[in-house]
Structure formats: C-alpha cells, structure tokens
Image (cartoon, rainbow, N blue to C red; front, side):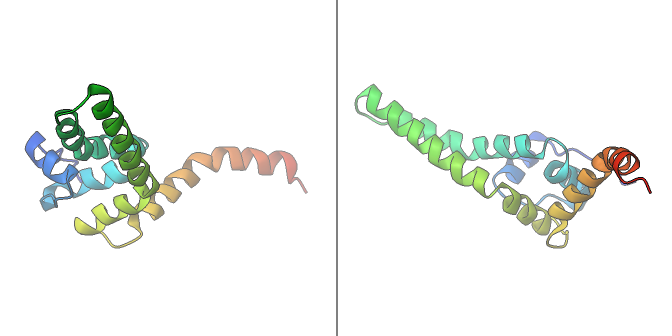
Amino acid sequence: MIERVRPNPVRWLWYAVGGKLPEKHQAWVLNDVTGHTWFWRHVARSSVMLAPLILVWLLLPGPLLLRVALCVMAALVGYFYSLVYAEESGDSRLVKNGFPPGTAKRVREEAREAADAPARERYLAMYRRQ
C-alpha cells in the first residue's frame, strides 16, 4: 500500500483553491476525495474559498443588517453550487492529480459495495433459500 503523505498547511490551501499537489500526495488526495468523510472535506474546502469573499462583503460600508444579509445570501448560493457539484469537483481534483476520469465514483461505489456485502449476504441467506 502506498503511504499517505498529508500536505503541509500551505500546500493544503493551494489544493483547497484548486491547485495540483506533488505526486507524493496522490494517496492522500485519493483518500481526501473518496474516504468516508469526503463530503465534509469538500465543505471545508468550499469554506476556504467562500470565507475571504464573505469577509470582504462584511467589511463593505453600509448598514450592518444589509451587509449581514449579503453575506448570508452569498454563503447560501456559494454552498449550494459547491455542494450540487461536489462529486464532479472531487473527480476533477483526482484528474488534476493524475488519476483517470471516473476514479472517485468507482472507488466510492467499491467501498459502498464492500460495506454492504455482509448485509447482502444475510439477506440472500434468509430470503433466497432454495
């Protein structure tokens, strides 16, 4: 098995905004996009992208209520589009880091099938006796 090398904070920020990591981080990138916490990791990367924009909008001149409303609406729209395309974004990250297209979906499906295998076996043993 390939060793998972976590990127340092500066490289992680570069990765979070869409940059490619060195080849030694490929196993980490694969786990980042396909592991059981992949969705929450995507939310964290999206937050890194949205936080500076929301902070700038919060510091604009004008009534506080209007600035807060602008920030809330921007966050809602930003997270909506980020989460709608979470799977595609993960696959794009893998392709950018040297994996073939479709790897993220394939790896997640294999993990799901492996996790569901015991329940499937119990079901077949109980209801499909011949």
